[in-house]
Image (cartoon, rainbow, N blue to C red; front, side, top):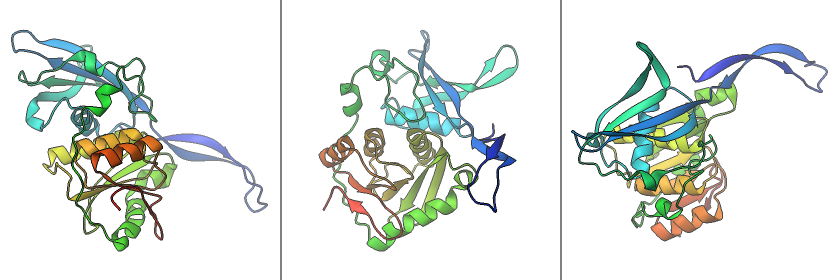
Length: 275
């Protein structure tokens, strides 16, 4: 599935050199992804729709793996028997439904993961039934990672170079994984910032890079509570973002020992934890 879609737009400008024009343009694709789980003993399998999230198609397996990991449902790829898009009818593959078969040894309690609404592309925790179910996943792991100013100043430029879809649409978030030396290791994009990070963590899980204690996670967004939560579950050494954190994000990072930076660009940054 494509991550961009062509549209026809009317472009207006007050400049005399650029009058109104009807031109083709590109927008980011946003479609729902339903994640279904099969779980239980081999002789008594059960099925549940875990969530429906609004995402940019393209790396649904990584998105699902990252989501399951940051929700605390799985710890490793071997916790899954299979993961694939479902067939719709007899032969058609429905790319907006993905089914995961959990290994029989995984204890899954549906009540802990119930949501009352569809997750929008702006919210990874919307509809969570119990706020306590959000915070119990995170263990304290005080970050010992030291990052130089020079490395931090270079992050935004490298992210900009990697964000090809953003260059064409201006409407997608990027999540990047860097080494402590500033080397770009992984990069993923999605219309939802939480999905972009789940895709990145899912890719890291597949490549056996977890935990991320010796890595920098950099996001083209603000640092919301759910991003800090996911970074802590992945045991990231540093979470840095282009924009601001929320008060709850700072509190969460301080409580769990995550080094948190905001407003990171080519000439400045704010450090909110680990002074």
